[in-house]
Amino acid sequence: MEKSIYSSYIKQILKYPLMTFEEEVEHSKLIQQGDQKAKMRLVQANLRLVVNIAKKYENPYVSIMDLIQEGNIGLMAAAGKYHYSYNTRFSTYAYAWIAQSITRYIQTKTSIIMLPNRKEEALRKVRSEKSKLYQILGRDPSYEEVAESVNMSVKKVKAILSYSYSIVSMNAPSDEENGIELCDMIPDSHFTPEGKMMNDMDKQEIKSMVDELPTLEKNVIYSRFNFNCDSKVKTLRQLGDQLGVSAETVRQMEIRAIRRLRTNYNNSKACREA
Image (cartoon, rainbow, N blue to C red):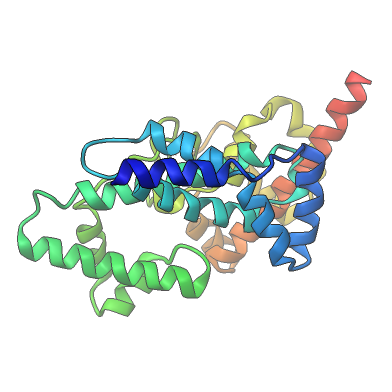
């Protein structure tokens, strides 16, 4: 039955044409203006990418169609976040979002199998509330926000969420309390594709560009990506406390700074290659 559904789905998505980079840029500009049809076209053009990624995570515990469905959720999120100023193919940017969505689903399905009933119920409750807050806030909620919503202490929420483990692998800074930079494994709830893009660039080459950023953005980049190489990477919350702003404000400053750097970096690279 599922094999038939899968085959039918593949036939359906093959009808959607792929996009060139120029078309992706044009669609991104339209999406920034609120064009939902452009967003849907960008999603449809990359449904095959989701299938390819889902097949890498196929396992006996979950169906391939469930993985594809979850991957499509990540794809839609990426389509809304993608910005043409990144100057990179949408598939490169979306890959991380798709993989994260799939691995989160696998984690949910496989990590609670051996839990005692009470812990399983608590984990389901916290995860459910966390998901609702994500839909409301448009971002991953903090431990404090989840704790307040489920009427538990922050310590208890952290303990409940620790029943499971993250299986998302990215080269990006962690926002966990210890603030360390992890090369192979980061908590999926703190994953940022923008951070991955930052790590993909040559830090030495763009250091001078960082120094030209507005003071606050420069300080954020130095602290988040450890350009001084002499201190631990700071979390969004730590930086927010230091600057007297919220963690979300720091995150927005970081994204703006990375966009500037990505544009300047690519312009510089294009001039050298001309």
